[in-house]
Image (cartoon, rainbow, N blue to C red; front, side, top):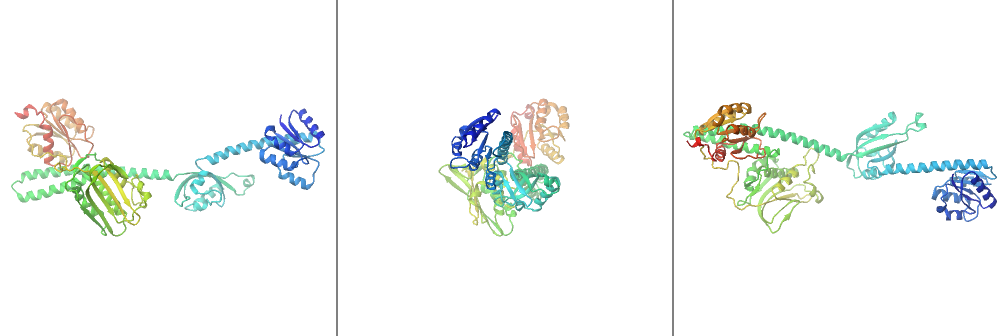
Length: 634
């Protein structure tokens, strides 16, 4: 049952048609003798079909009225006319009628035309709903939806495609390929298989920058194409994978750095064992050669070289980010002066490094190894920003901040601060780049010229030390990086380092020490040194053997010296197990990895490798001077 509107200016014909419709079970929505009358109340009628005479009253004839109904309301129209001349037919065709019935007509002819018109109208409405639905999916997709022909010309594209490539229809998809062979491979796949599975393609975006598009393609065959002719249009769907590829590259870089850090940490640990043995044996040799000044001078040379090597090892751990954060009061001038020789080796011959020191009476509180990373990274960054020739100026000074000051990174003040400046005469940077330079993996250097982590590490370390980082830069005029750290006026505290005790402590004689150390050179050196200090020494090369010796000695054990990291059981756990057998025993835990400080209670202390006899005595004083066992005073 359908609602049908009748437009017929002859009353008798209109009445006859209305009665026919009612007999067939349809509803007559209204009868009109002009197109103007129909259109004036069309919204209220809501008809499913209009039967329209061509020759009607009013300002519009039936053909024109049918065109308006079709355009504005999409309702099917069947034209009824006694005219079949060529001109009328041509005009009628332009209004896209759903039927054309010549008067006089039989009821069967009208019925057939109506049924076909109603069916076509229903199919058309369904098609439009489907088109709207798929148009919404096409346009609203977060991915790039587009149609293109064999030449690569884009026929239609959605908003996401236009966002990436700047335009849609008329764009040459082929012309955006960095490698034109990439488009040819897509055409070949569509010719042979009809589909091209998802793959990554490098294209040029709207700004000319390279983007990575992960896309798949399909070509729907028409009956003509299935007879062997080539496809005409293909559909592509892609997503911009540029950011994903960038993150994957960052992950790979981070994994490489983590591997390098692990390797550096392992090398530093082994190196610290070697240095501990060298420094310990040098002390033993010096004690044996007290009456040989010529030998003592050579031994002092060995000691100095070992201390320099220990500093390098500590820096290696620091740059591998394997060290614990241990702030100390230190002189920034002294730290930079110690680095100056190494910094100059990092620079090519045509770059000059000028260091100016201006804080002789002030200290900062920071981790020295981390602060060294800041200085080195800033100098390396300045080096990379310079072409051939130029000067890098590194200076320190004391400034007074009347109020708290914010930098690009962090805050400092009010009060006295030490400012470290690294200035270069390089290419400089644009103002809009400055806020991003401290982001991890962001770099203004070319591929393979940097990790993008140097300045990120600088910002992290300076924040950790309670300071700020500021940058001044202009293209062609170089850059100035400023680091501000809170200043400490009292220099008497000096540089606080491990074993800060005076190293003159002599432990009581007759104590028993158990040394558990996997490195044979370190173990033998410790055994000889402790024996010379008056200990009865038993050694073991691992925790298993150490526990056996501990069971033999029992409560006689006064001191356990053990490496922190050993197979099956660490030195800290071993010392706790031994304390069950010897409750009064003290423990000296050795570590060559610069691990975070352990929560040691009672007579436990941590001594970092490498160390000399002075540091060893200081550590023994801290644990043995507390509540000594009674036998030690006998």
